[in-house]
Length: 146
Image 1: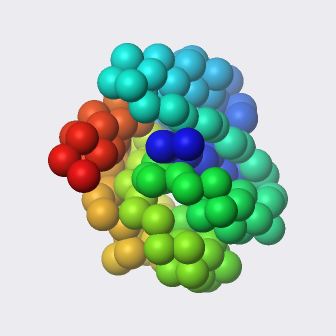
Image 2 (image 1 turned 90 degrees about the vertical axis):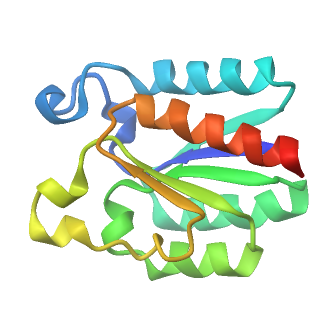
């Protein structure tokens, strides 16, 4: 597999969760668009969503053995709390892009810190669902260069 798209807690409620912040696009819509975009570029892609930190850590460990070449992750609230996910990224050494639908820097103070950003190749925040498209464009370019 070339690309793994991971979504963290509460992102399964996109489309109905605080639409004034997160919009009305569902996670299923985002995942379908990411798959179509990657496949159009000749890449294989898989998606994964969990509300449980350990499941995301386990999925990252499995990604290494599967030969995943790049990860796009919206860690949701785990952005601000999860040393475990950070350590999993450090352990598997798979490059990744961090995506946030809302502009976390324009929100509550606690949302301004990410445990992942300094390990990420790039961070997209505040572009709504389009941030995933931007991330996939970047990943496609990186994998074509490799």
